[in-house]
Length: 96
Image: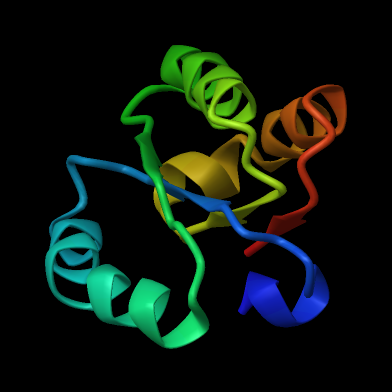
């Protein structure tokens, strides 16, 4: 995961689509265990529309995340160029 690519990261934001049932399941069941196993903070930021992507990246940056993991979803795939641009703008290395 991102901790291996950014080994000094103490906080890695996770971008999810809150309308995606598999994302909800992962956030509820897997992220707490993963955060504990990696000894990192994994704040979740959500976007269910293209306009919300801007707010999600701004939130991750405001929380001083060192990187962002972008969960695959039709939204993030369809708007991949925007995701890349927002990651660059907020200086958040991203992992999909």
